[in-house]
Length: 340
Image (cartoon, rainbow, N blue to C red):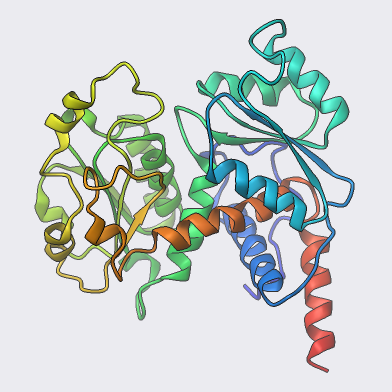
């Protein structure tokens, strides 16, 4: 790919609810758009592709990276994002999610929502006539998945093919783990969830990853044997008790995961790969699921990964906003003009 050519001129679906809804070629279209726009903006380029476009952002939970990345993305592209924080609108009080979807679709061009339950984002998409983007649900985290894959491509192991790359998710099978399984296997990589049996990745998610592997190459597996760490190119972890586990005492999770599944210097060394990169979706509970020495170490790409949430969101709003192709054409023209 030259960075300017898309396989799909328009999205095959109105909404971005789950990466599993899209094939490899379309996910690569989104990633191509995102990376090309990132490079153009970082080189001093200016875009107004989303001029007079408005993104409604509904949050049922607190957010740092998702909120800031979408808000900055829209501003950098000439549009506007409305932060509809918890309790700021009638949703859940006097108005149903279906009616909220209908109203926002009459006033805004796109909707992004971080929801408590996946059924809520599906309802938003069903009743909104404009594109809906899933900012995270209890099932998956597709916007994180796009940023993660961009980060993996940015730090791709030298001299390797896709089917030689090994990505290991350590610890609890969170929604981030689910999406990482889909994205890595969709690209033909080898995915392993390394975690305890009682926090194992869902069988249906793992099966879908194995079906991806049959189509694209690579593999998808679960293991509680530390031998699986050998040869890893990327070690990825998430918090052990998150937004959907308020009812579970911290002590229970610590007993399940610590110390075996803590990503520390010893675990990174166990990969046998001195170039193995560390990833974390953040926020991190320092010195619980990951030690300071790893998170702040030379092999950590967690901060690039956080920045690539912005990279991903620019690509997503352009692609699902129907402005990806025209934006890439404009950037290509600008680049060709500079090279004359």
